[in-house]
Image 1 (spheres, one colour):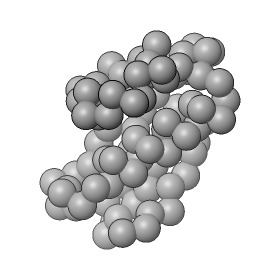
Image 2 (cartoon, rainbow, N blue to C red):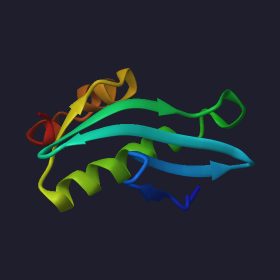
Image 3 (tube, helix red, strand yellow):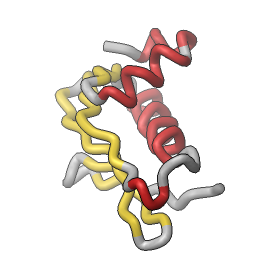
Length: 91
């Protein structure tokens, strides 16, 4: 599934809408660290890899801006555990 993901820096949010359900990552930027606070995917659209795609977007955003990521969110922390090659991005 290809998602149209939007970055809303004014709101500290990365988001997409799937079947009228808002899915998003909330973050707080304290350059050079992006603190990922929450990853929200409603149950109605869960299990489709949406959280993973949002997380990959956040990782790309961090790379592009030279930021590190502090995975406060349990999903993001688990994502880092599953992908040890990402450890250099971790704050």
